Length: 130
Image: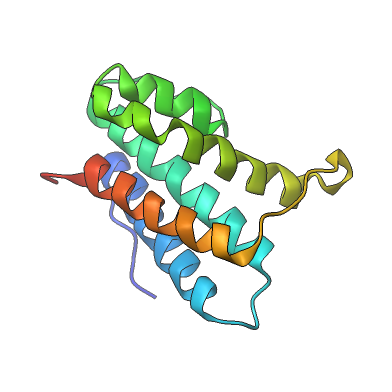
């Protein structure tokens, strides 16, 4: 296992990269339940968004809500607003896996794959130049 970086900002990016790599691997591994891959995808996007915001002076708040984070990120880069629907869907993955009694329906695999591809576009924008 590689050691995490020592500075806080680098740790956010390191954690995001690791979660995203795990989510990618889980998507191609048929033995991993899609719900688990979806939850990892949420956690990775949450960390990328928080990293992006902290880089811009945002004071860390305890939240798992991707909609809240993408709206805040959009105030720094208006092009990020086009990913709001993706963030809403991925929020659902997290809620369904963490709180199954809520009664949300987990999406079909083809939707998960589309969301994964769109999330990769979001990550490219968030990490551009870093």
